[in-house]
Each structure stands twice: as C-alpha cells, then as structure tokens.
Image (tube, rainbow, N blue to C red; front, side):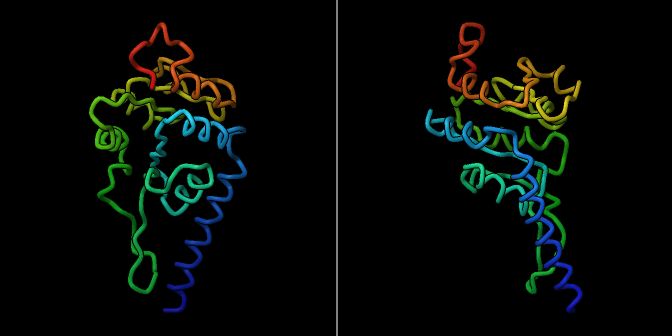
Length: 176
C-alpha cells in the first residue's frame, strides 16, 4: 500500500514538474497575448489532449481561468492512488477537439483556433479561422491546413487576428 501511495505521489509530482517545464519553455509574450485578448473582451480557452494535472496549472499561470482549460483528466481512487484516465474524454482522440469546440461554441459566436498539431488541424472545420503555429515546431500538415500560418516564435499576430485588425478586409466575418 505504501508503494502505491508513493507511486501516486510520484505521478502528481511528475505532473507538477511538467507544468513547470511548460512555464520554462513558454513562447515569449504568451502571457501578455492572453492578457491582451482578455482586455479586448475575447474568451480564451485551452483545449489540449495533454493531462489536466499539468495543463491546468500551466494555463492558469498563463492567465486562462481554470474553467476554460480542458484536458484529459486522470482518475485517483479514494486513497489518492492513480486509477487511470478519463477514457470517455473526446480529447483522447484525433478528432476530439472538434467535438469540444462544437460543444463550447455559443450560437452566433465566432471562433479562432491557434494550434501546432495534427489534432488542431483536424479541428479547423469547427472554427471560423484556424491559425497554424510553427514558431516552436514546424509541421507541414498543419501549415497545409491553415489559412493563416505563423512561422515566428511570436503570438502577437493572434491579437491582431482575434480583434480584426489584421486581414480584416479579406476575412470580414471570421475574426472576433
């Protein structure tokens, strides 16, 4: 029993360390971009196939409210031991972000998705504008599926896209 509790404690400590690693590797200016989006009245969500025990603390550190951070939840038993993950979560599948975005999106609200992975590209049809992000890792399939692709390690153009200040003439009804 002691080893199971130690194992669970180790899992939780490892996930806390992952959240810290996320903070150390954050894209420069990411916190400021999220603050600017909030100031502009935009609702910011993090939708991730990662583990919530690491993603939520990182997202909160970025300035996103915990209730707007969706990731795969782990299960623990009554004694706090790891008991698996939420296998019913759509975020465990390649197309899960599409389902989550569709469920979250209020009627009449426009949506913009920024992502760097194949599950983000797969969700492009669930939003008005998909912005591929290659500032950390370039993925050709993301670039191919993104009407807008950011190559630089800089998220500030997202503020312009989300507020309609950039490309507004070309995409008049998709930015908000």
